[in-house]
Each structure stands twice: as structure tokens, then as C-alpha cells.
Image (cartoon, rainbow, N blue to C red; front, side, top):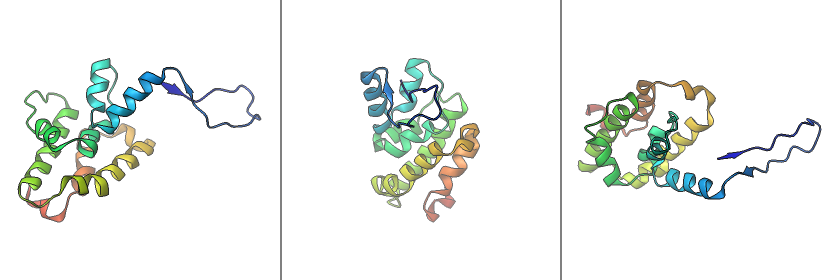
Amino acid sequence: MWRRPRDPDPCSDPSPELLIESPELLIEECESFLAGGYVERCEALGEPVPVWAWMNVLAHGTEAGLRAAATNPSASDEGHQALAFVAATLVDLIDDGALDLETFQREELVPLELDVIACPATSGWSAPQLVSALLRALPAKSSRRH
């Protein structure tokens, strides 16, 4: 959707500007990211789902979206299974009154998501590694869950 301009002269001014091939697609991509729908967007376009995207519905989605992810009966691949497992854990904590979703998203999940996006080493994470990172972010009370 977007890319950095390629300059054949490495001594030229390294401009940080981006070339936008399609502003509409960039806007759609940003909207889906901020609404917690990046996995759905990737799947709808037939694009591979980056490992960090499985965190996206958790970090930016609504409580209704979490509940839907937690009860996804068609979770056949590792990414969907990881999402369903962590979403169910969060829903349990919300139902028990042990977690305020918006605060947890703002203080824990969004920073964790951004760390995972920024770290090249996480691009090869497996679903269990992602689940482990997400569960470590949960409040201490959650250790009795799942």
C-alpha cells in the first residue's frame, strides 16, 4: 500500500517521506488497524496475516468483538486459536470485574502491540509465543484462569 521512495544515489538527502500508491487503501488499512479489524482485512484481501495482527482485535477491539473472538467455533488455525484463547481469558476477567478493558488496552495491550510490530525478531513468533506474551501482560489475578 505504501513504500519508502528508492533513491539510487545513497549520498542524496535521505527523505523520510513516503510514496502513497493509493491514499484510499492506506486510509482503509489505518481504519481497520485502529478498529481492531486488521486480521479480517488481511483475510478479506487474501494477504498473509502478520503475527502482530492477532493482537490487534485485543488491543483495539470492542468488548463485543472480544466476546465474538472468544467464541469463534471456526478457529481452525493457530492464529485464530490463540486469539480465541486470550480473548476468552480477557472476557472472564471482564465478567469477574477484575479488568477494565479500555484501561487495559491503553496501558498494556497497545504498547505491547507496538513493541511486537517494531521488533523484527517477533515476525517469526509462533501462536504459543504470542499467547505467552499476551498472558504475561494480564493482571496477577488472571493466573487462576485457563
